[in-house]
Figure (cartoon, one colour):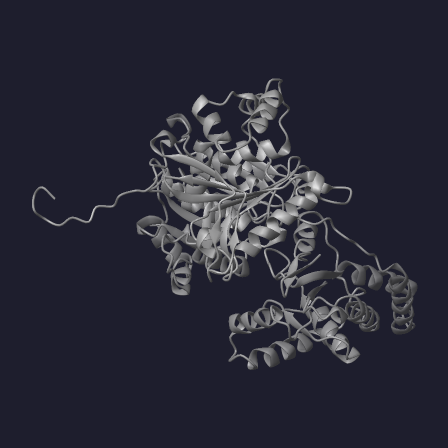
Length: 623
């Protein structure tokens, strides 16, 4: 250096803000020597930014594919070639730099990143560039130097053919849509800079289009401030992305994207949930996804971000400096009573998970009072058509991704539902016989009154002989349709009460066909007092004590152990739950849900989404 001193300047290899400051190159049929030097592979197209191969494309002719959808078949072939070329004995060094991978075949196209499993390659739906823009790009004449480079070394007849093809206007295809949407220089830089992350649990992740446009809309919304006459706080709103479309990672992408916006990079984030298990899962996703700003964030970082009490929450709000805080919404009840629980800064962003729940009363108002100028962003995966309270509380819908669109995109699978009507008819007969027997000495008025109480409290649903019949049906169905496949797939049983859960486990174990485990919250000391049979209370307490004795009387350790075992090839086959793990629980092996409880609306949609239709076994997909 001129001053004679050593310096270690940071030199950016890419100018993310100005596309024209970078060099853009494309090559076709790039010959790459394999890692072992035994053969070559030739990806169809490689795109470079400043000499770095960031994009690799496999382009296939649709007419070379068979079947009724040749383009789709050839796109799958292109994906297969991408995955093959990344193997250690192929050309993995090329993919050490690649961030975006495309497979195209004129009327079809998918994108992913390195090591994206075939089933997760995604479609793209453009929400900014209209058809006129696509047509303009498609039919824009090539610069003379670009045309000369394109046909250099190729037969003159090829140039003549394309000149004739380009002489008339051409219609944009789905292949063109994908290329323009992702490879327009400014869009590509934006996408690679903010929408590719490395998760230590699942590997490199590239955003889907609903996440990209949803976060863009959020950043624009959060950047706006209300007039002083309305408090001067940041604007918020609702993100309605259907269950199963990656809501947790959308939050992680947003948290990281805030750092790239100069006016928002100082913002602190409060993530609010209404269940401990959801808070645990979200903090884990933030930790493994790098949201804490470090690739070496540990489990302790995730734990330290979670509030311990209402007092701890009040301290963090009023005097804390943590960039990310997780809390249960109910802790605002205690926190709001403390004088330090207030922060008038507009640089606070509150992310509310499942915003349609637990935000309709005083607790929500206490949260708003503690953070009066914060931007409140509610994430929900369930429809808001019947009840608009969520949007009224948080603001307008900022971005929507509906269940119908998700099914069309193959992001989620259509629901396959089977009602077990014959078996339930038999069970009802058994219930009626049982009821007649125990009420034989009662008057008609007493029998009617007792029947109303049974129906109201769900006691009829929990009749022991009925549960035994249904348990046998569940065990038989699971054993014959799921377990015998030998793929290590699992299922859930949703019951109406903790007592039912315990009775289901006993009945399932007695079949000898399946193994099962229970995950429920701690029993209330009043559990069962409102039931007709007061003996229900000791049964629940007894099971709880026995279960806790296996894990040092630590409920969290017990739940963690059961969920961990559920994610392996071994026992249990079935997870029996009441309310826990029916929301936000993601386990790829969980492929079937047996429901024996009243579910409707938000709760039903959340519950059925727990069954995952895609699970990879030894390199093969189960669908």
